Every structure is written in structure tokens, then in C-alpha cells.
Length: 299
Image (tube, rainbow, N blue to C red; front, side, top):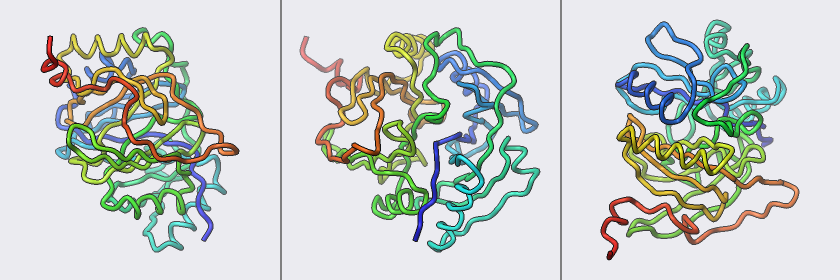
């Protein structure tokens, strides 16, 4: 069975209880900008030249509503659809009006093995105006590398790994298998382009994702974002640290919907010609401590 060829994690949709809180968080903490208002009372969010990378709509689930996987062209999209159908997955084409609503040229929908709704598309809309953020002078690392990454809930890592690699065409970057603060960690990291991972698979998450990540261009902008989060009363979940696999220097905090976000810089790039997947025995080289643990350390 031939696989599809996704090129990037293009966008994510969120259905949230407190739309106003999400706008304050996205604009004043993350440094994103509102692209457009939607008829439902939601809005889109920009961080690069695309018309949007996130869209927020009112909804009781307070979770990710969809992940959008982009393809370089119609032939690549067709290959993914054929691979999924050959693998026994239901794939439905959205009508022209639905595709236009998403700002894409052609759109199909399916579910991953963990129940995550997926948009499969090509031909994304580009904004008329360049993107710039006064709060993030170094800019966001996106464009051809996509929105960033998300750690997705998987009912079975093996099943989801086969789905994303054999059917969507993602490639394995590595695993992290260890224990942290008494909890087992077993995560598979997959890339669709040179970004170390666009999606990671972890079993047993409370929501559809554990976190999403946006990458900025400098360590200063990571620190400034953490300062803004602290001033806004956002719950910091892990202090600044560096991961061994993607090399990202980042911190984690809680979104208004309860799942987490990560802001980082200096992420490692993957060259498929030379990359060899491996297994790491730690989640961080240093840092990424829960603040309550730091408070308990001896003075």
C-alpha cells in the first residue's frame, strides 16, 4: 500500500467555552494577531503569511476540534485519500462552500485512530498583508514548516504510528521513553518536513492534545512570552528547559481550555537523507521543572 504525502501541520481548530479569554491569551500572551471574525462569534489567528493558522469557535468541548494536514498539491492530496481508503478509513470530501470556508482549494475529512478529526487539503489562502508581531520581534518559525507541533492523544501508539507513517506519509523522528516524577512517558515523534516533529503520539491524555507548540526566532522572545504569561496569571506548568530530541529551548503553560501550550526556539531540523531515529531516555536535558517542585527544593 502506497502512503500519502502530507507536507505540514497547516492549522488547528479549537472549540472553546470562553472565546474572549482565548483572544486575550492568543494576542496578549502568545503575540498572535486576529485575522478575521467569523459568523459564529469566533475568530482566526495569524502567525505568518497564511490567512490563519488557528481558528477559535464557541463550543462546549473546550478542546481541539480539528487538525488540518496540508499537501503540496492535488496529486499528493489524492495519494493520501487513496491510501486511507485502501486502509479501510472513511474519507469524505467536503463541498466547495466548506472548502472555501476553510480557505483551501480542496478538502477531505477523516478521523485518526484516536478519534481526532482531520482535515486533508491543498491550496491554502495567503493573507493580503504581511504578518508582524510587536510582541515577538524575532517572528514565528512557520511557513513551510507549518504551524508548529501538537502532542496528540492516541488510544494505541502502535495503531496511530502506523496510521501517520504508512497512510499520511509522516516519518519517525524518535521516541522518548522514560519516567518523570513517577509517571511513565512513552511518546513517538513524527515529522512531515524538516521540523523535528509536527505531531507526537502519547497514550492516556485527558484531552485530544497534551499541548501545541509555536516556535519563535530567539530565546529572548521565549523569555518575554513567559514573562507575559506570568503577568497575565497564566499557570506555568514547566519552567524553561531544553529537550534532548528536538533541541528546543522552551517553557510550558496552560491555555484557557486546560490543555497546555509550549513556546520555544532553536528547534532541530531533520534531513531525511541522514536522519536515524533513536530512543531517548529523558524528556529534558535540563529544566522543564514544575514550579511547585522548584518551590519545594531546599533553600
